[in-house]
Image (tube, rainbow, N blue to C red):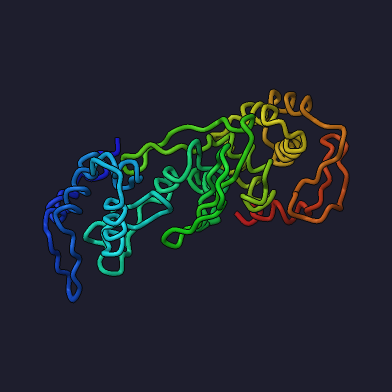
Length: 296
C-alpha cells in the first residue's frame, strides 16, 4: 500500500543519488551513506519511518547511525516527528523545509493501537463545518506527552479503556491505510467526551447532517456497549428532538438509562429544565444548540 506514495515522484530517487544538491543560494549535502540509507527506505515505499526501520536499512545500530540521522535532519533531508520517528523531506521542501505528510498518516505513526476520532472524524465525514488544526487520536495506551505539535498541526492523544476501543475501520489516504472511527462510533465518542468535539450543538449537527447515512440503532447499541449511561440519555433526547425516527434505537436507549439526571451539555453550567423521559437536564437553550438548523 505505502509503495503508492512515491508513484509519480521518481525524480526524488534521482535526487537522492546526488551527493551535492544546489538550490538557489543554499546547498543540501547528502553523501553516499545518507543516499544509500534513504534509497533503501524509499524503495520500501516509506515516507515516514522509525529508528528501527533505519537500523534494518543501515545494517546495524550504533552511534554512527544516530549521528547520520541527526545530520540528515539538520541538512533538511529529514524532519524529526518525535523521538525515533522521521519524515523524509523531498526536494520540493526547499531550504525552508515547508513540507508535511497528510496529518492522518502522521498520526498513524505516533502510537499503536489507535484510531482517528472526535472532531477529526466529524470533519472527515462532513458532519461539521468547524475546521481544526488538531488531530484527535484515540488509543488504549498512554504517552508521557498527550499533545504534540508537528508542522503547525497539534496531535492530541485521547486515552480510553479497552472496553471503549472499538468501532473503527480503515480508509485509504495517499496509498496508506489509516484507522478512523466509524460514523456511528464517532457520535458515541463525542457524546462521551464532548470537549473533543465542541459540545452538544456539534453532535446535534452531526446527527442531522448524517441522518441519511447513520444507522441510529447501531449508534444506540454502540452507546450501550460504551457503558456511559449519561451519553445514552443525551442521545435519546437528541434523536427525538431532531425528529429522527428509529424505534429500535429508542428501545435500546431507554433500556440503557440511569436513574440519575445528566446534563445535556457537559461544557455548560449545570442548571436548566429537567426532562423526565430521558433524565437529562437541558442546560443549553434549544434555540442555541439547534440554531445552526434554523439558519440553513
